[in-house]
Length: 256
Image 1 (cartoon, rainbow, N blue to C red):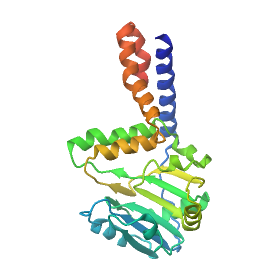
Image 2 (cartoon, rainbow, N blue to C red; image 1 turned 135 degrees about the horizontal axis):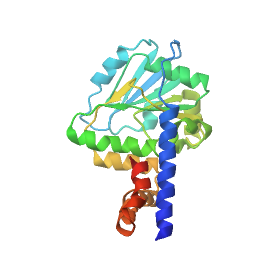
Image 3 (tube, rainbow, N blue to C red; image 1 turned 60 degrees about the horizontal axis):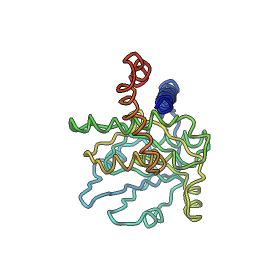
Image 4 (spheres, rainbow, N blue to C red; image 1 turned 180 degrees about the vertical axis):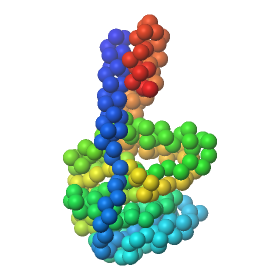
């Protein structure tokens, strides 16, 4: 039992350290003020037959970036068929429920060029449309930000870290096509940043989607999800049930 308690405390310390690192390093997409002319192919993925991309397309047309082509990947259409139509130097995948603000495309390209990135994944700022969404959606971002030091993703070529959110992903077209031809997109130089309100997402609560994002965050490993839930939920309960209340000071403090 004492070994399990130590494991819980060590896990909480590590989780706190990652959260603190993300807070201090401020991993947000910045505004760089530079303008580029590279052609960008924007692929909008429809996840349902009733999806309407009108708002997103309107926000794209309002961008301060002229050389773009918009490709709508219809529900049921393969990703390969959609990307085959792309002719730009960069490919930008956007979720149909997103809306982008002026400067997004220039800032994405600037970031990709400065750090020679093959992939840049941006986590959209959420717009909450219900009380349930305010309760549920922060949890998925909470799990990500206390497990993954975003600023360090650029130091690894494990694409799984950059796939934690698919709402907005920019690829260098040559790198995407090369890796797609090789049957894997697993060795790209990637980075993950928070959107800093350059892109917002408004979607209905989907527990299936939330659970799938949790799986992706934990490497699609069911055992890892089980261990995470065991340490986060069962850990403090075990400490409370078996030890004096004073021993809860550390875990409660770290959780807070």
